[in-house]
Amino acid sequence: LAARGVRLVGINYKDTQAKGLEFLDEFGNPFEVNIFDPEGNLGFELGVYGAPESYLVDTEGTIRYKHTGYITSEDVERVIQEVEKWKR
Image: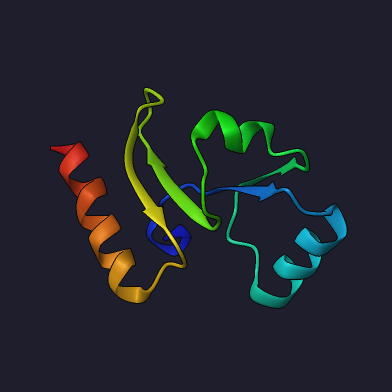
């Protein structure tokens, strides 16, 4: 998604900073910003109930799409299609 111009924000939800950084080192860091949320307060505000979860948020701050679970290449295509709809 990042390679296709989607700005990504990562949230390290209810984990240690060290484990979050280890994850990014192992799998790469596509995120423009990373937020540390050790107590899960931001996750609670977003309605997270089963990490990992991903949200697409438009420029007005409206959540347009929510995905629970890991993202596959098929999911990326579906997400890009959703983003393209907003631009119309």
